[in-house]
Image (cartoon, rainbow, N blue to C red; front, side, top):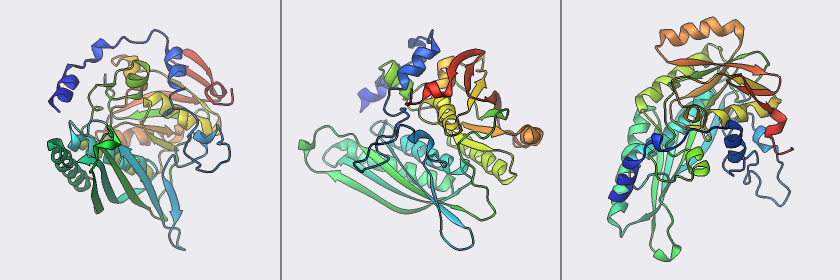
Length: 346
């Protein structure tokens, strides 16, 4: 365990060269199965899986369905995590729960309850108790912060070493409520010309990102930057913006960082985006880093003043990225091609 911590401490983003060609990075990452436009497990049948499945889900992983005749709905979402459970189980668990809550909040759903299952814990190893205790603390802390009811929690112990080196993994399921009066905001970009904003702070962080692990082949790095109190502030802001109906779409910055979050939002309606990166942040961290506490939102120009006033009043940081295009993808005035070039149909 101490060896893992030592490796994390020795990591520095300064050891990673900034990319000279963004297009090379983008198309290299697109063959990563975790970021591919094909979700290989969205259908357990024998039928061929559609290469367009990235755009088929309007709710981007939250399953929302009716629970009564009055229009009230519930949402369900399941997430798993194994990064750094052996070195920082509390923080890893808090990050996982924050991600799940952020995704629900973006959809206009209010998270209400959570269950957690911890798998592949070796009860004969002294670190097993450390992982279990830390994960339990992370679960309880996050549940209190996000006002969630813990409805179930279990640990599955591995009794036999013959299974091989299976990393400890935590899986959480979250349930939320969407009332009749609430707006079910989806992740897909809606209209050419609407403005794009990033809510939250940018930073030079690429820890545990798909970019760092897949493109640079660096597997030992810290967890993504994370502050649970900042996360709560950002999620409260999204809830308020949804309540005031000031945003057209919203997505949590997730796997693949901001670029792939934009791509997932663009594909359903075959739109594109023209954005400018932050000069004070490394371009790879800005586009591909997976630091927590960031949301992508689409704002109609008619609502922009009230949107800015609301975030300013709440003292929530935000950054104007750019606008939605008819299909072209541009970054810092450089064209990356068109959205059809980014799908599996090409």
